[in-house]
Amino acid sequence: MQRISVMAQPVVITGVGLVSPLGCDVGEFWRRLIAGERGLSRIERFDPTGLRNERAGEVKSWVFEAADFGLDSVPSLASQFALVAAAHALLDAGYSWPLDSGAVRVGAVASTNFAGADYWEQFLRSLAAGDPKGQLFAGAVFDETPRLMRKVFGLRGPAGLISIACSSGAAAIGLGADWVRWGLCDVAVAGGHDCLAPSPLAGLSALHTITADDIHPFSANRSGTIFGEGAAYVVLESLDAALERGAKIYAEVAGWAQNNNGYHMTAPDPGAEGMTQVIAACLANAAISPDEVDYINAHGTGTQPHDPAETLAIKNVLGKRAYEIPVSSIKGAIGHLMGAAGAIETVAASLAIVRGIVPPTASYTLPDPECDLDYVPNVGRPADVRVALSISAGIGGSNACVALRRVE
Image (tube, rainbow, N blue to C red; front, side):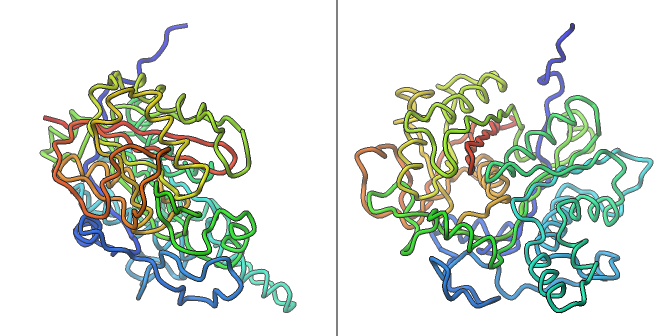
């Protein structure tokens, strides 16, 4: 059987959009992120009493107008985030919507951990009250977002959703790039979304992944993560198509990889086998050598077992190069955005390439002998980034890695 080369058609990012605890505009997000600002505070949308931590990366002062998207009813909060981020990404790439169905085939790869968790909880309350509201149930199901994207943006290509824990967003971008490479669509909108809600946070509290204090990625006094909400989506198309229409280019999605080593519900294996394999596979898929890597946007959850395991995986694959490059986690600034984490971190890595500065690890405090790389403490730093990796990991042993390369 002839093997199809996934590198036959270079795929690039031509648009980015996001909704985050540091702002809903890419410029504001980047400015605040680089400055070391943090978007974590006590949850205001619902009463967080009883959760392991009452603070989170909440999107503040959120207003969504369904009519702006041609909708008769308001979708779940997570889908609201996704629609706004995807709309911004399309406009950033130079595409107005609804799209002309005869011009390009546009697909969508969405991702999430908990989808419309806010609507699910409201539906259960209506069910308990003896008046089950079907529209709430429809808003809670996972396919709501890709379905709405097809409707709102006029997409005519394939559409689907990935949910593989906290590596979902990175995997969605990798899969979207492959769809374009393989000719399944001309353009792909890909990314992730999630919203804060009591039930997911209660479950994550029970698993003790959440710190009772504060998040300190890669620091000796780390004690767990803090979750957040938002969305990040990118527009992907072939390099030839982008050049032909004069589109701005953020970076090439040079390759990606995903695996699942199924070691433990919440912790990585101590030898970092799963993450080591996924980083190595990503570099092989992208035809990039370890010595070419200039920056890594790490998963960096701030949990005791994860950060040294990720550090070990990076050293296992990059060798001495690991000590020569910046490695940072943006979760100290925005929290862990669940299904959106890998997507917004890939966006951050692409911005590092085009803007020549790497984001910091906010809330970095005490050095840890097991975490002995350059974690860019607290303030961003100028850097010449030609190749960047974005690493993601999730509950149940799911790992993903995306390789980005500057287009000269």
